Amino acid sequence: MTDLVTTARRIATQAHRGQVDKAGAPYIGHPERVAGHAAAAGGDERVVAAAWLHDVVEDTDVTPDDLCAAGIPDDVVTAVVALSKVPGQSVDDYFAAVNRHPVAIAVKAADLADNTDPERLALLDEQTRARLVAKYVRARGLLAHPHAPAG
Image (cartoon, rainbow, N blue to C red; front, side):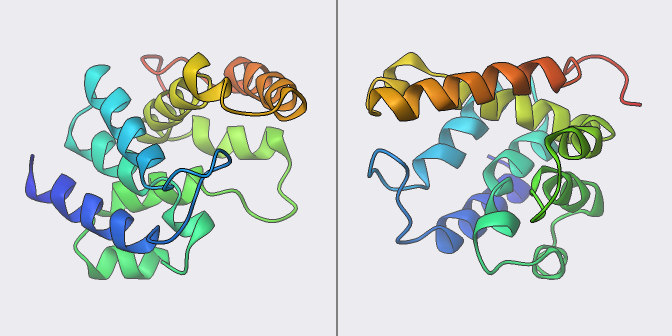
C-alpha cells in the first residue's frame, strides 16, 4: 500500500468512526470495499485513495482544505469534491461533475459496484432495496464509461 493510500485510509477510518450503513454495519466497510473494487479494476493509487475518501467531504466534517493539509494531491481532492453531492444539486448536475474527472468516474463505477452487490442489497427491506436498485440503474446510465475520455 502506498503512502497516499495509507493516508487516505487513515483519514477515512477516522472520519467515518461511529457511522453505520443502511444495514447497521460499520460504514467504513463501504469505502474499504469501494477501494478494493477500484484496485481490482486497475485503478492507480490516486483512484484507490479517492475511493477511500469518496464520502468524507459529503458525510463528515472533513473539508477539501483538510485533505490538502493532509497531503492529498489536488487532483484526488478535486475528484472527492466531484463525488460529493451538494444540497439541492440535481442528479444530472452531479453526474456532469463526476464525468468531467477520470478519477471520479473510476471511483463512482467502483461505488456503484459495491452499492449494487446482491449480497448487500439482500440485507435491506424490500422497499429500500427496490428504491436503491432503481436509483443505481439510473446512475449507471448517467456515468461515463470509466475508460472513456472525460469531457
